[in-house]
Image (tube, rainbow, N blue to C red; front, side, top):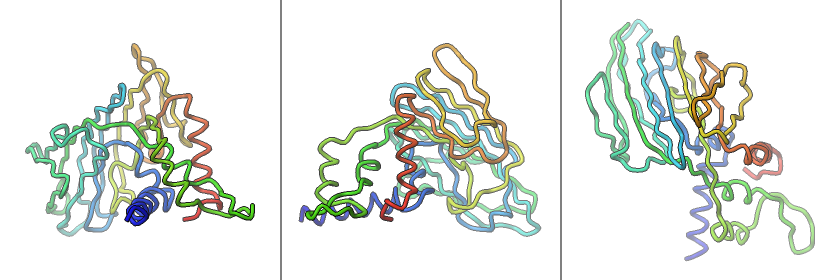
Length: 260
């Protein structure tokens, strides 16, 4: 029974967090996101987007305001899923649609809607979430192991995975993701975007698009801002002392040594 439970846990971790680079990133604490479930992504345009977060201690207080438009010549019947990772509680997630409050239901975090050509719909999400992220469960399970004959092999051993739960540690992470997407994979066009991330002074940003961000100091916080309409995803904020280890882990995740 114990091995069966561990196998199930292993499958969930690997499938949910490690099967592909996009899914690995999806498990990082991040802004609330809107995932469009029906309709072609090119039929939607984000005409307004304002995302703001303040990170302190182990929590993130984030807000996401989005206005979405039907830019096709036909009516659209669709729905969005509200993705809110690691909320401190359901009561700490507040949602309104076109100015009307909507209760957040973790079991079915969705809203169905219809849009006529040229019509818009507005979403406002405020959430307090945790920024604690399991470091060991991602990194340690990726090491190459030696078999009994001393030969190298790819992957990891089950007994090594079980040890993770005995010494697992957490790090603080926060990611700027795609914010609005189709099925969580396909991006939606933005005509306007404003993103602001306020972090403790010991935090740094890891991104391939540093040129689109402006950094300033505000009291005991660093503030990163971007008005870029695209390519703002995949910016990760974390303590400076974790930076090199985080980068090394990401390299392992994308290497041939990782058994997908």
